[in-house]
Length: 221
Image (tube, rainbow, N blue to C red):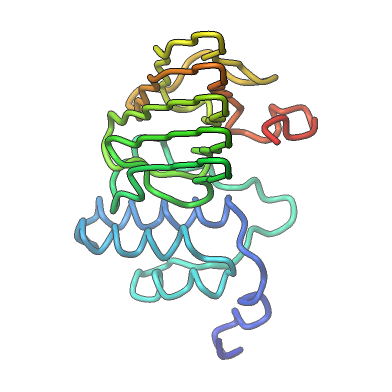
């Protein structure tokens, strides 16, 4: 970008999760003010969550008054993450994750469809919802692990209901250190069901806020 705008010195800086959430919040505010339509919001949010640098975030804000991609100055507290209810919507991602004597994963910025089926046979599937959006407020993951494993990582600001069955295997939920026991009002609801046959399905609930992890190693690895 041209230095005349005053932004040239940082457009190549890597964007953080806080930067993306800050821009997403600006876009949601613009929707509430009538400056954007819902379709425009969804299109721009797709750009936001795929952005790797601050410069890639800039185009979604150029026609919004007062909006800036400027990173937070030292000592300035970061903007709060977008409320979980604002992460509902978008074009659904893949409806299945299949690993047969191999591995498969769904992670990063993606949209969980209303129904996602995961199957692992002598292999492993990893599903990570920490940066995900949700096609609908209520989504379901059906996980089947036969002599294999399915690991599902969820942030603690969504509602998770686990009803799977383990037979000569384990279908379990674990709360990581610092994870809250309850989600805020309006949060997406993810129902996880299925079967672990001589295998394992593990749902790991982790803190959304990194500071509540106490600086410990990421236990989802």
